Amino acid sequence: MNPVLALSRAELNQLLRNKTTAAMALVLPLALGAMFLFATGEPDWTFALSLQLVTAQGLTVYVSTTATFAARRQDLSLKRLRSGELSDLAIIVGVLAPCLLLGLAQCLLLTGIAFAAGAPAPANPAGLVIAITGGVAVNAAVGLLTAAFTASAEAAQITTAPFFFLALGGSIWALSAQSPWVAALPGGAVTTLVRGGEVLPPLASMVLWTVVAALLGLRYAKWDRRN
Amino acid sequence: MREPIIEVRGLRYRHGAFEAVRGIDLDVAQGELFALLGTNGAGKTTALEVLEGHRAPSEGTVRVFGLRPDADRARIRPRTGVLLQDSGPGAELTVLETLRLWRSLTSRPSEVDAALAQAGLERRADVRTSKLSGGERRRLDLAVATLGEPELLFLDEPTTGLDPESRRRTWDLLRGMVARGTTVLLTTHYLEEAEHLAHRLAILHDGAVAVTGTLVDVLEREASRIAFVVPPGVVAADLPVLVGTLDPAAFAAGRVEIRTRALQDDLAALLSWAAARDLQLARLRASHASLAEVFHNAQGVAA
Image (cartoon, rainbow over all chains, first blue to last red):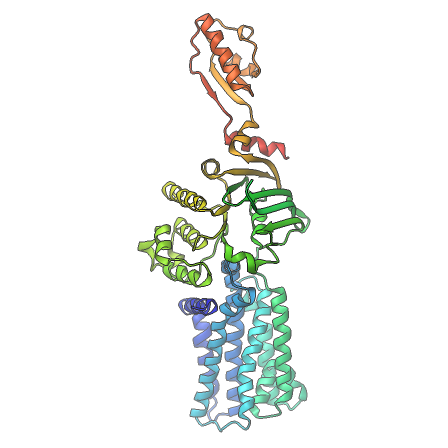
């Protein structure tokens, strides 16, 4: 089996066998998604879809990426893997791929549920696809960067709060205002795309967030246990 | 000396203001088992992690297979196996899953069943690694490090936490691998491990090499010992002229203790002296210095 695939499969097994991580990555985003969809009577579809995507991307991709990388560093799995033949990039991809794939699957599932529940067809389908894939990419890259400054999986509950709420706040700002600056924030970019607005500004914002965070994340990635 | 696999010159490593390794020179030849000994904090693990490529040296040159371990990992790793001091198999994976994962991560051909048997964990194959005892985890770590018999093995305290039988099996495994051409650099707290396994060794103290050489070289640094009970009626002045020196305090307590670098000559002189006077040398002992004595004295030499 391809080494990165083998590592990803092992990581997925570990993620699903750890009750806390599994609950955070699987149950919570779906429960919140259902709440956004059904708790407000007649749904505001832009509101529901935006917050569903931002929450799933935030919890399943961002928080899980940060917590997983910090936990693997603390239990010395990363150092052990770095003693082997995989490159740094292959290790990062292998360890974090399950979080990305789960996040992507949840976004698709929640979007499908929303459409099944009566959401109108998206004004700009390409924009919705970018909202899903771009949002996952931004959250994974920022998760890698946040992990560099997170001592443990427990500490991730604190260190992930600023960006998570920034993304959520950006989404709410985009839902309540028409400022061109809303797309500069990750959640705002997702909401702008879900709403069917112009694609280029939020796409540029997502690419910038992803590239800068990934470069910094790779630059500052730590592999050994922090004392 | 055969072709050196590891070459270290003037290695220094600093953690901020603290210098953990202070100018180490080292060569390890192909097919050699080299042991690094030292107390906690002597710099063994830090030096080893520089050689493994986990840390870049602050000063000095380090070459493994003629390459820089911190910069040429991609070319060195397929030829090496690494056992970290405190290793981390995935806690939620079973023993079998761990070995299968690592078989997928190494380019060397390897057999999971053989690795399982080597670790003595056949009956624990489906147990999660978090449920293993410390010794079982160590054996699993070692099985992972030795998958596919790498050309070079870095082992950081490989037998810590193992029971005597497991330790003996590990020694046999390493001897077998070395006989088949593997080069091994290991650190250990167990002096008998170095005595039984190492072709050469170095004792580190305070980040520097205090003593290095073959076991014979190292033991010859320290004086040998001759001891027996003072025969009735004998005073110190009655003893023959010897190369070694007599411990007066021990003599006053009723025991002759001589430290000498000419064991055979001094022993022959004493036996002739005793035979000429028809004396019995009760509880006579003649011995070389032990590695424990060399180790203990090395702590003072480099301080």
